[in-house]
Image (cartoon, rainbow, N blue to C red; front, side):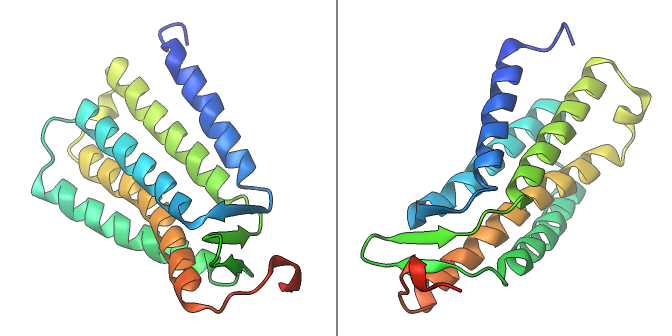
Length: 168
């Protein structure tokens, strides 16, 4: 752990704080639904690019498959949530849930594992299945966040406004 840059610890603490805050009920502006999927996509692309040379067609196909599966999981996960919409404020009242914390920590652990394997020249890291599998897993995590937030956005757009104190 002595070779881990200090910014990694700071990033971990920031992501941990973000994940824990998602465990509590909160009201957010609808624009904030774009933040996590975008952040995860940027970090995932940067991480993949830093570890592997150019993505192959197989990597892209596995990423598309992972993204689709992740989006379906994320979409399905929030389908039962009771939310409140305030269109005058452009906000959503959401229940707290552990899913985002799990996604954030799993993504961090996955990327940390890959970087550690690359740095230590682990034998399994050079196997031909690693880049497509990594692309699928990264895209799956991104898809979970994206599917979740797209579903919340679609509900924001379609359900009538209901004050938070009337949500059952």
